[in-house]
Length: 279
Ligand SMILES: NC(=O)c1ccc[n+]([C@@H]2O[C@H](COP(=O)([O-])OP(=O)(O)OC[C@H]3O[C@@H](n4cnc5c(N)ncnc54)[C@H](OP(=O)(O)O)[C@@H]3O)[C@@H](O)[C@H]2O)c1
Image (cartoon, rainbow, N blue to C red; front, side, top):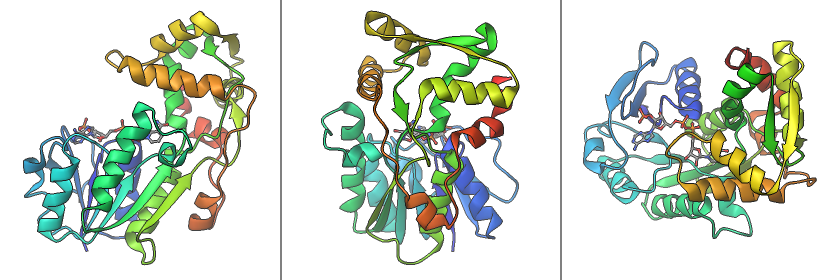
């Protein structure tokens, strides 16, 4: 059995590659500019917005870990079907199952889920919430200033470790019984953004300050924290989510523990795993 991992150099995809290799599964890995992938992986260059670039890439592939990219997804899943792919495990988002799905992020993921569901290929949707990796965005400021101004610092999230998302995807790829299942995934606890900074400080052995900002200032700080070129609507949506989570516990799911047979990794563990990025 050969598994194709798309988005293979990303936070989640790179972990999926390692987990499959550890199980002795032949892995093909694709992205637009793939680099840094381990020996033994069949590395391919392909763009999810250009389905034609996947025709050869799907050849001989049984299962696919699919990175969600709305532009081109119809053509990509059609090419997978033609090539005889048996199962797609899609990286999606918990936002697709929230009551309010009229925002840009949920809509994009819903469009991808719909294309995969209608492809005629067996599917599994992995639907994580807030990635712990989102907090990498704080690293440059924390390193430079020893603290950070955070929009709605008391907003709570249940950050999930990218390794756990990948581990659930690997379980769905390597075992029977996950077809037509949608798995909401979160970290094991609801914590404030201020607490995340405190835990980063503990991981790097440095006391970090946090200033809570709101209103117009929150908009300015939020815009500064995203990479240049991030669509303003994404920034606005994320700030809206954050504001709504002020003083409110985040949803915590036990799916990761049920599927992996071990507790989901905590944010404190994530901070230790990635302390080099913040040191
Ligand atoms: N952040 C969150 O809290 C959150 C929550 C739920 C769901 N999600 C979803 O999770 C995804 C992000 O996952 P991640 O953090 O693992 O991603 P990531 O680290 O940003 O990596 C993106 C990967 O996809 C590849 N890629 C991007 N565009 C591509 C294209 N057009 N064609 C082929 N490959 C492409 C990139 O490689 P190349 O650049 O080489 O192509 C890279 O391998 C997003 O779709 C997001 O909506 C995020």
